[in-house]
Image (cartoon, rainbow, N blue to C red; front, side):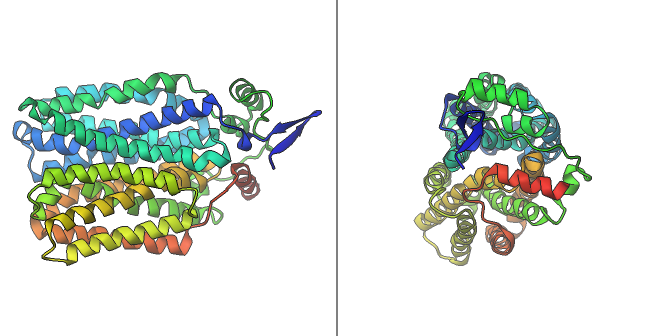
Length: 450
């Protein structure tokens, strides 16, 4: 349905609205934060190599510092999801980039590995709040027909930030022994650049309508979308008998919660474990031009994100998800099974692995928020993000340790097992969400909570 009756006039349904400036502003605000997230997480890998002699960073501390922000992400996303569902998206969305930028500056002035660890944990906590909030904020503003492309920009932005971090680190590497401080300082710049857009973004009209504030939602829609766009439909009042985390595991939403947690975790565990230490991984594979290979790997991340953006609306979500897991697992299996593999094929297979996972990561931004209704969206995303980040933190910590003790092929073999697990779970339980109407999902939630 594209039109709704409103008095004597027929108004365009909120989810079918044409693109407006507000959509671009929210998309850039969310994407800018995602670029900052990717840059902040990506820069730490090359920084740690350069900071190791000054801060006394061995294999154990390399793993701790590499995974610290991911541990912070666990707690930040887990706790902020229910808060954003209860109190709104805007309070967190508007201000967390200011905090992230400040922490990014502080880490450049540390004098010990303990200080750096504490700040990386705090950075992860703030990033976790963003992971739980910007996806609901953007999907609840975005017209249904443009949802795949606009939310897909988040994936490209993250890959761009991650690849840019490697490029900046590579460029700053010649500044001497203190170059790692400049690398860390550079991570504050995108945070402050995106802050003005965050501060001027209004609350989600869909959230306002769902929480008894239809007049405020209608005023935002009139001002930002135009008088010919109907605000989100009002819903009946209801009082859920369970808390939000409990509701995520009720029969109505249990399978979706499992799929969200599993697919996100199985995607990012190999993504972060390999990506954070890609130069060291390629050195362990006896590749002479390891840093060049790492640069190609990170550029491929960006290319994969762009490919994912181009095909997101051409392939059913479920098929895209399952196929990506299977293809990435195949590329990595060939890489570890071929003992005499030529160097150029190592780079090609790592690039294929990176490109496929980067393309599939678009589903984190499109598919994940489509799994949950408005009243559970931030909570569900927060829980899935928490599950994924604790898995990524463990894998990032263990990868250099496992490589030192058992060799690179054993470590990468574990990544293959994780990808195969993701394939199985998604084939068994993943629903199709293509062309989903968020309003319809909310109606289902109302019925299950009655």
